Length: 290
Image (cartoon, rainbow, N blue to C red):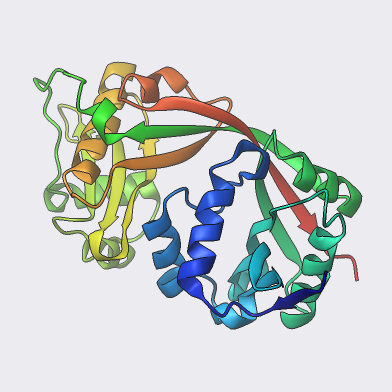
């Protein structure tokens, strides 16, 4: 048994491994997609401010991938979201998590000091590692998942007016988001038929709540990126979420999407829109001391 830890040499094969591992509760993490095409796109186009070779390592045994670990690095913030560590046979390779952790840390800049983990509560191998690492449990979260076939069975009321033309309301958005007009126009320039703000207004044209839904179909990216609900009843909140899902699923590339919510969130707003409640997750932070 000769384990080799090295840079990834076959991205499609690594993608298959990550998809297989991350769809098992005992290996599941939040900072990795559940779908192969999205994982491949993330690794190819969006993963880390450094190169993939600098940010990811893979463990092989006789040519088989048995482990993987990646740091999605934000260089200006000196932090990383941790993709993994994944170990296919944890009982057979009990030291591999730590070996990969130290190996990848040797490759990245010393200024990288802060690490974030989002771990399924059933992923005991990583939780054990994080306990040894003395990472801090920050909060509990819930994974929710929307499936295209399930959402399509919903028949929601469309009588309320949802807006998507932001330009007449830019002053209200500036006030809501606490940004100046130059920042607003920079953001608004990114909006198009794929990336939208869906929102409600009141009778004096103040913004009551919005959802920013982001779709880049060629990169298999379709997500509810962020949202804000102010003085908005739950029915309209659910309607905004539902319309956002309809927008994502209008593209044939997408059959599901996931979100991770704080446990304090009103889950019924999301289940009324078509999401299904999944597993509990734990968000950890770890800061190097040396």
